[in-house]
Image (cartoon, rainbow, N blue to C red):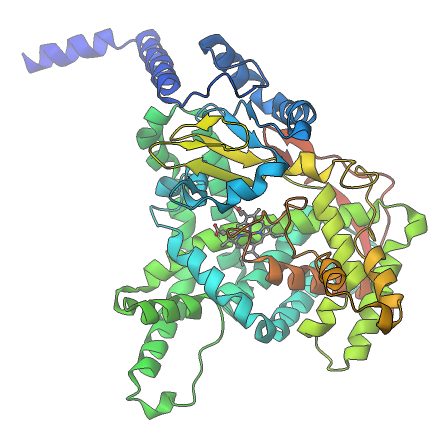
Length: 546
Ligand code: HEM
């Protein structure tokens, strides 16, 4: 009887039928998904093909190639007139509401229980699957609380890694030019340097550990993109399967980190107990591992921390820190090497960084010295303004059950809706930035230099002094959104400013770099810019530097 049944079943399951079942399930899932999505009233204009069933299907088809131009169209038509609009998003998301600049403060000041950053990230990166189910609240709060206050003490260690990583990547041959893949080069520098403040030395130099972290971050990007293409209802099925590779790469990194994490936990527990005199004078190295343990001790749950938990807590920070910085550094070098030769970009940065380093006189970078690199700061900030790697980097999800109503225009965003700020439109708006499509490296330092050249007696207006200070790359505003803005603005940006300045300084002081005839193009896929990762640049070690 049972044998008959299984025979019947296997005969009825032809490849054609299986394909038909899968197709029916997929279409059914998309229809369920469509009916679940929040809808916006007619008062909110839309770009793209609208939110009817047919319009939705067309939006999905054209999302990859048209998202950027849809938002650009909406920026000119609506944002410039202080109006919000809705833009089609990836298949698994509702249309996204693009909030105009004039309402940035309204959007960013709403409490997290109304508009949530965390839920927006979670719906974009699928933390439940791709970050192995670990809540990123603990590591994000740890970075917010501890990173900035330890910044000064971190500089010498970071500088040491910058020198080691650049020497290893670009070599020490002063005779011959070397062709280097620029993307690979930044991947050789940033993970090591950044991990000095995450896991400390010597683990930050363990290439297999670093490779696993980079591979994990790649898995998150790739798998979140795949999940976006699946209807939400299928995520509990597809998510865990895709995440197998994330587990694999986490496991590989964990095997390298385990003994370090174990030792730090036990050392800090002994120190905290106060009973072992050998630990009286011992201080833990300042890095993310220590801050996580310290925070858990303060909050009274340190006994629950295991090496495994620690290794999972660092994953969201590795993710937030590495690819963003690699992308920024990569774009920066492309912008500098393809800039107008008459601007003498590299020579100017070489002169400024060498002079300030010499004047500071301590043989190592200091916070004050790095803060005085106005032109270098401006060159980096300008590259971040122009060569953004996403249409927008500020997203919020409506989590208030009753939704949220915009007081200026009266539109209503129901529970589950997404709001975003249009970084690209803002950064390329000619009313805010003169010649916005041009890379003008000294755009932000010119005014500062003119101000500082004035006699001291003419520099006593506190408001003006503050405005000048706020021209630096770490100051976020509604007009400059590379690190977002408001209370969730990137807490890593003060470190990034130090890191990129030290990298650029060492690079230009020790290497010649051949200019590029033109700026290699980014390729837009949906809301994300795909960098031209095949680009090679030519470098040669400067004579007298080895
Ligand atoms: C050039 C490099 C970087 C860029 C462009 C960048 C940009 C951003 C942006 C746009 C956000 C989103 C804020 C929002 O949702 O409003 C963010 C969040 C965050 N970034 Fe960065 N970031 C960079 C490097 C780093 C580094 C090096 C770290 C840590 C060491 C870091 C840690 C974080 C954390 C923890 C958050 C979440 C903040 C929160 O939700 O409250 N980032 N970053």
